[in-house]
Amino acid sequence: MESDLYKANLWGEVCPPFRRDQYGWQHNAPPPPPDHVVKMNSHPSTKPPPPPVNVNSSGSGSHFSGGGENRPLQSPFGNALSFSKCTFTYEELAVATNEFSDANLLGQGGFGFVHKGVLPDGTEVAVKQLRDGSGQGEREFQAEVEIISRVHHKHLVTLVGYCISEDKRLLVYEFVPNNTLEFHIHGRRGPTMDWPSRLRIALGSAKGLAYLHEDCHPKIIHRDIKASNILLDYRCEAKV
Image (cartoon, rainbow, N blue to C red):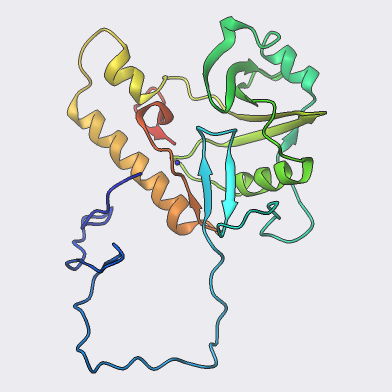
């Protein structure tokens, strides 16, 4: 889930001019005069917001890390993990994906493999099996699921459930049927995608990312946005 900083936000409102200091940070205010004094409030009335959560789908899975500290991730919502998502057995997902057959393979990467599956009620899903050796314990994986399960947006792929079976970790997502943006731009043979469709995809992807970066609590930093990670439905609506 790297990108440039833009001088206009998603709704077309132009932001103030930026200046860059010696550390590379960008600011939207002119530099202060030499005699400028900043008064600090010794009794802050509110607690600082939690650090953003990083997610990198090209790594060992949906990898989250908060605050830059090398420690096991705890749920930001308290000690009790209250899941509203389904839990699956490994056997159930094996049946759904036809034993994780090559015919059902949707994609693969450093994280592992994604297979298409069909649940007993006919629901189509995408089953992401994380590669062995991620080093995650059960509680850390559950904390990840707790965070992902609270993300709800039109332009984000919905988590359906998960599976923990011995050392196996699997995530079950909604199935998005119309392949990826990369496929439609670079992979298929046929008419070139028209510009209104491209604009709709760009706006949808941006809205999904804006929700992750600004409206989630804690905020989630995607870090791996690319054409192969943008899924499309048959109306060319994007899902990140």
